[in-house]
Length: 129
Image 1 (cartoon, rainbow, N blue to C red):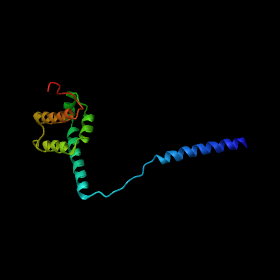
Image 2: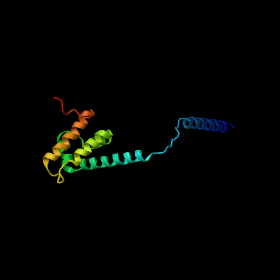
Image 3: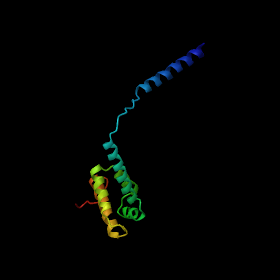
Image 4: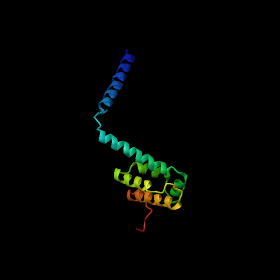
């Protein structure tokens, strides 16, 4: 009978711990997403995709590494930009020449990315400024 009491007390202890753990779970809250909010989220996702596609180019990644910036970290930071910063960066990408093979173009974009990373405090490239 003592084995039964030990098993019963272990079972009570396990069930008590699980009951306490269930009390800590938070309920999911659902809500309506308006058309404007959805359109803004879609536009942001498209902008992030365009900028990250640009950063995924081999020549851009090589330039980032030459300047001491990890390309993966740069892509993570692009995802963390505010909507205004992302719009500005995307607009500058749209203003580039269609060919995009110019070294000056790559350097210009790299400057913009590094400037944004500097303003966000991720890098410390512009020490003298």
